[in-house]
Length: 123
Image (cartoon, rainbow, N blue to C red; front, side, top):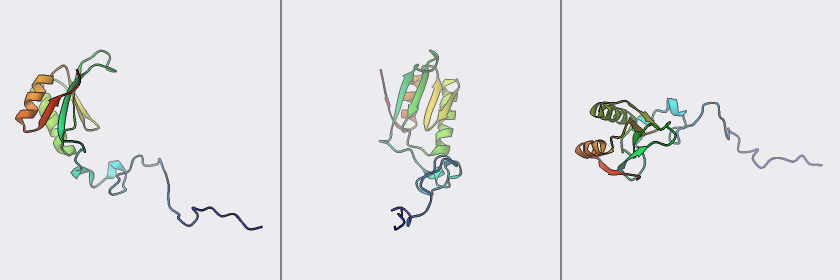
């Protein structure tokens, strides 16, 4: 009787691994060691959406800004400048700027002043 061979036997190579976490689709390196991530710009329509959120934050109000068409480093600088403008804390998580408190109108005006297309999102 002939030995049954797999149809994938000739392909070889690693199919899936969780050792290094997520990989960059461009350079196939782990996201932390990616060499092309500094030049990557957030995909989208180029409109910064500013919204007020309270869900999942223990009743605290947070203003979020998503969709800003900037790379990682300029986005960090923008987040820092917006936090200083509002006089409060905040963070940058996965391309979304979070500012503590309800500052929707102030942030909309500041983003428009800096030349971004911005609009209010949500209720």
